[in-house]
Image (tube, rainbow, N blue to C red; front, top):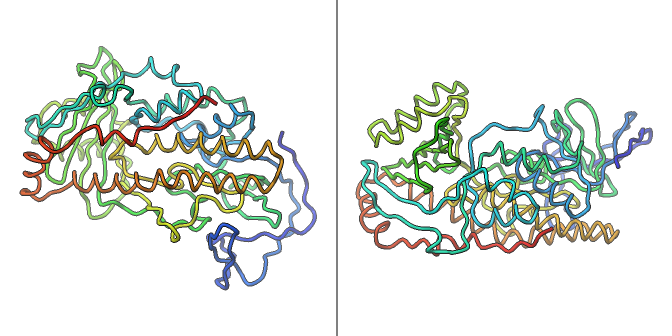
Length: 444
């Protein structure tokens, strides 16, 4: 249970690099090697306000945050999730979950609730912009255990949240500052002025994570491509078979996949020298997306015409490469990052959400065991062990996703001709491309 105390004595807090009180002198080093700036003297803050005490605080109520909270709950560990929005973030389109993602959802007990709502995708077909088929694959023929479904992000979040104890998620809780205390606890101050003192902080706050920034991670790097995404609606039933459809052009590619009997997800990925301005007018976004493929097969344009404007988004694609000995580790003391907050990756392998789900169960198992041991030092060890184990998994996938995207976004006509006439029809094998979905996960 959370407790509330009134602080009247002086606490010494080590301010983060983002702090407006930062004095650019000296360095200090955590035991795991992460380096951060600090002032030459500790900053003394006299507090005369109530501070809630929490054992485990998860910052961010997206897929990573809710999956981590539910994994911990299944293992008997209570957590508090801080979500900056006023309610569950049910916007966005859909995401593709492959075998490894479904293994995690099985482990945390929600997969069988989700499966009946979404179509199992049997295979994929690759076409040129004029509709010529280059290659087709059947997932089960390559890997009998493979499972692929496109899942509405809204439904996944609502399902995860629905299995959490009441009051696990605290909405309208935007983080204003984070400070480390001398005894290893972490003081979190919210925009509304409330404060929480946490034994353990798990940053699941997305690609622009304030927690990751505080820990010294660099900003994610723009990959040179942007993507339009949308979710078409067919109240009387969508007409497509259960397969992923990819369309490759020059410096431009698109795709669509049935999500359910009435929904179809689509995307268009295009080269751009910069992310460009943020556009919130949905009708403008739809027109821009349609203009990119106006000379392509009418099938894609018809899908876009069946898309409600409010489901269309445009996002720059970015990632962060976790270079050994250069990038900070996943944890600093008893603060750790998960999912996009740690290893954002481009969507070219369909592994962003899957890896976040993997992170959640791996971290939860290690952390729950450490908490139950009642040895404070074992928590830091568990977080470091999580980082080491997951780094060897997510770093290669991040690099591979970037390279695949770069190849598929080639704009040179000669290179595209080689890709379409030699590489895709004759050289590409699906089996090796699915190996990264092998992930063993036992029920929690």
